[in-house]
Image 1: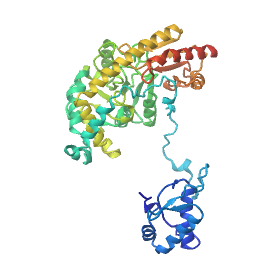
Image 2: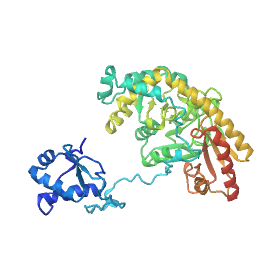
Image 3: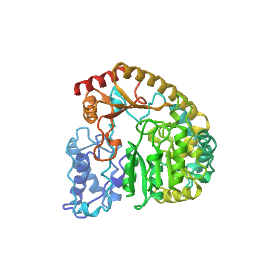
Image 4: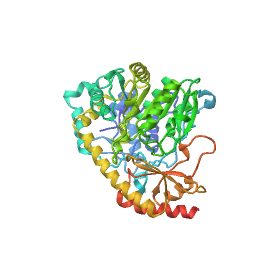
Length: 487
């Protein structure tokens, strides 16, 4: 298959003959790397028609490039980029346009200055990746997922894949969430009270955009999921960090001016604290006193392999005060980016309208594939398999941590996928992480999770979701050695 003719065009301001311009155009494409060796060029007839020149002009250009070893011909097959063509330069080709815009003035709202750290993209290349939020491909049921995706691509589901739902979602996915996923959390909801989102982060953004203004106050946990803090800072609301304890967010610490409370009661991020039932009730009572809304991120609830999870805040809510955020990205795989919002119908109507102005709806093919994966029982089997693997890894890590004298600051009562760790106060875990990376060990420094000027720097998170159990003891030993070196 040849390169599309649309790839080529003549510069109306170029100098020289048409033949010379065509030669230069193709040579520059080869030198820039756009045309690699062995790539087939359009036929002389097709390129001549596209450029509006005579075929002989193109033929002569190809012939000259062949003489210079840029191109080679293969009988009646056509012209190809020669195996002996000059190598593309290793430097970035010079931009031929001159950017004269003062972007510091042109950009009205900047979103670059966020606290979200850059995580290594090559984490799989490290031998001891205590990396949070990534899936273990050895646990995922690839065959079942592929079959569900193929089923969603079938003729029967063609309409659900190609149609524009406008502001609606796949009814089969919504129905399964309403009938099977939410009842496990004690939540009863109608389809009109459910909205599919592009992951939990998209759900949190929608909630913040709808509920918060510059005059309203949001209370968040400290430390907390740093992307949520970034979202709220962009909304320009008043932000009140509330320090968490071993049981999560203390209701009595919520400021009187609070309008919206953001909480992760199942597995607090990052401390992994689980909020007890009595505190959940007190949190709802405090929200009622403040006439505040609660956005519940039911984070990692599926990984409750030690004990059954506590009821969701939403299940205890009798006033429609709680907005519930769920996600399949952690339980299936992060790249899926599929979650859901559950709330009172007036709120979901607003969220649906806002979502439709940004992205209409998540892709129909992905929604239907997930619907099949859930309804055919693959999801439940996957959760059981992951839970068993995580429990084994957690036990191995607990033993290794105790053996090497490391300090656990928080571990999920019901399970989870990580430990929240505390190093000696004089240890900067940003420096610790950099030194460990040289030994193929990845940890997550804790500083970005905290708010304020003087953020603690000696906390770190160790996840066991991405590392095989047999590598955990050696990885923990290396961490312990490096902490000793720093102290």
